[in-house]
Picture 1 (cartoon, rainbow over the protein chains, first blue to last red):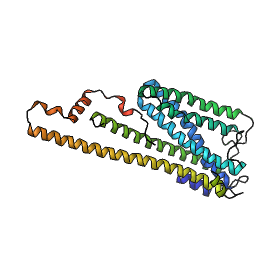
Picture 2 (cartoon, each protein chain N blue to C red; picture 1 turned 135 degrees about the vertical axis):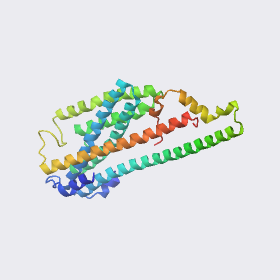
Picture 3 (spheres, rainbow over the protein chains, first blue to last red; picture 1 turned 90 degrees about the horizontal axis):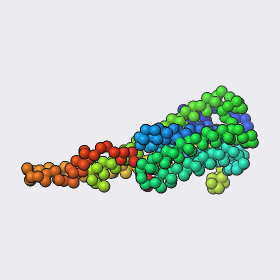
Picture 4 (cartoon, rainbow over the protein chains, first blue to last red; picture 1 turned 30 degrees about the vertical axis):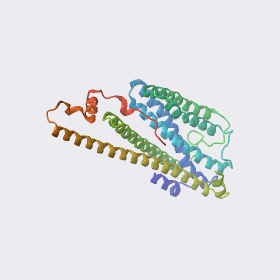
Amino acid sequence: MGIALCLVFFYAPIELEEGLLQKIFYLHVPLAIVSLGGFVLGGILAIAHLRTRDRRWDLRSYVTIHMSLIFGVAVLLTGSIWARGSWGHWWVWSEPTLVSYLIVFLLYATYQPLRFAIEDPERQARYASVFAIVAGAFVPLNFLAVRLSTSYLHPRVLGSSSNLPGSMRFTFLVSLAAIALLFATLCSYELTAKRTRMLLRSRSRILGYR
Amino acid sequence: MSVLANALPENTGDGYVAAAYIVFFVLLLVYVAIMALRLSHVQRDLRDLQARTQESAREHETRQGSGAGSSDVGSSDAESGAGAAAGRPQSHDDETLEREPA
């Protein structure tokens, strides 16, 4: 993360049109890519849960989606700040990229209430997995639909229409790797903490202390 | 948000860039602080569990010392719990997600 920040502020050139404001790009876009990837990964882990009936896959799916939601909050906040600086508005409702991301975010915001509304742990895990798979499949479809849409203000970073210079592309890729690494570390941190708590609770119950 | 908007300088990207990075790091810091708080609860519970286990082990030793050979040696709470645990197959209890306080 430190290397990425150094590259962003000391190596990557200042963009001619947007100036310093474009530096938000190295934070906002990797966050968006990693959070969307996390939602899809949550769906894949949920498939593994339904196939094996092993509760550990469900836990992994839950933690991945939870972390993606946190990253999603950061995406919306940094995106709003960038939009305000660049377009003069905190939010543009006519922009499909923004609205589609908000729809995905709100869809996943219902994941936790839905999950914890079910008391039976077995059913809870099963229903949450089904939700994660369906919503996970919706993410790439949504992304494709936005890509196919013709009217947008939102710049395209990757793909044939991108004309990112080499140094900017390199900085962007390092930032993407840093954010992905941060995501994996935080997921692992939360997973370990959750497992420890569950083990502790289970041992207390077995020993008859709770 | 409007307070932030008023605080940001007009026509320069500096304020917006700083705001975006600060928002991200504050969010990260809040998350780590929440996790640290939860881990401190785990540590407290672990200490509590350890104290209770030691207490019941001492109780068990005392009972064994006073009534050696009596049939109710293994009837302490901890032992019956442990016995039940030994007889019970390892369930998915360890992996059950429960709603936690924010």
